[in-house]
Structure formats: C-alpha cells, structure tokens
Length: 106
Image (cartoon, rainbow, N blue to C red; front, side, top):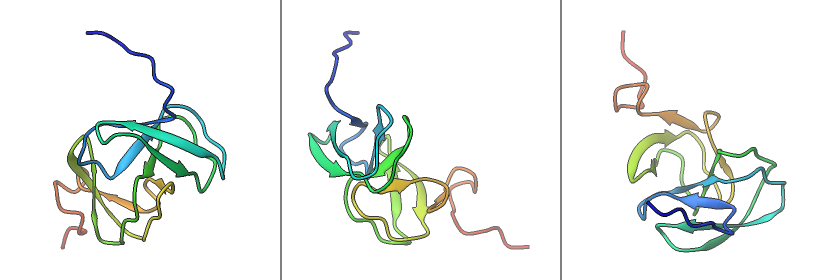
C-alpha cells in the first residue's frame, strides 16, 4: 500500500457518502476542502469542530438516511446544511437499533 499525503481538510470515504470526515480541527466559518472518492468539494464550516468528526457534503433533510463508508449509518433528526456537523445531536444510529432508527416498541 502506498500512502499519499493530501492537502485536503476532510476525507470522503466512498462516492455515495453524504458526509466527509475531518482530518484536522476546524474553526467556525472556515472554508475546508473535502476530497476522496467523490472528488474535491469546498465547504464552509458552520461551527468549530475537532478532528475526526463528520460534516455534511450537501443539504440533507430530517428523516433522510446518512451514508458513510458507502453504508447507511443513521437517520437525521433535523435538517443539515452543507458544512454542518453530523453527530449524535442530529443523527439516530442505525447500528445501535439493529438497522431501524425507530425506537423499539414495548
């Protein structure tokens, strides 16, 4: 395997992904370059975020399924704009619920 350095600020892991993963901490209002499987995109960051967190690549509506690694990872509980943080405050995990983001019924 060859490791190639990148000047990107965020990485898109799969062409079908809705999010990019930050490769460094970023500040609110900063323009970052996300590159990888989907090609380069420049996004304006909505809030300061640490390394490793996810940001939306495009507008995503509440209720939509979010993809990372080319796989569904969760369902949004709120609308998300490009460059906004995608995390537990606005994303229900599909993994924690066995593939169904709806809460279990008693």
